[in-house]
Image (cartoon, rainbow, N blue to C red; front, top):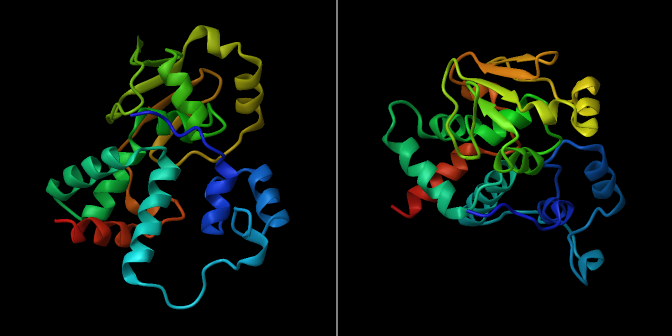
Length: 209
């Protein structure tokens, strides 16, 4: 599936909340605190009682945006999560968190999930010493992800890593000097901090089954 290339700020303005923790998007939301469109200033962000379906749909769309996956991909992840033991919502988040592009992003090697996907697709990421250009690859416990030698010298990557950026989740062991990250264990739901009500996403897909 193709990556989303549209305006990220516009999507977040539509939902009326910050979905990507970057200062520039925070400023845009503060400056343009209204929905996008020709008549955006005349509108208010959605308030009051909304239908259950409307709330479920919004959460599903937010989840797809945060992890940069398309509808068919997300539906397939849900089907797989529903067949796994345990809670479907927790399983769904775990599957999305273990995508290779997401692990690269969470480790702080890319500024956004879109940049992380680009790094993977262009062959700049190694998994256990081998190049892998599949963003959807499910990182396994013990897998070691490293930057290709050329990317280790990239001025933007070096600057981003040196700045620290996002704090990596506890299930990842990040070695900034070695430009590597190891998955220590399967992520738990409480460790996945995304601005999405995962139960509403599960309810959305339950409607379709």
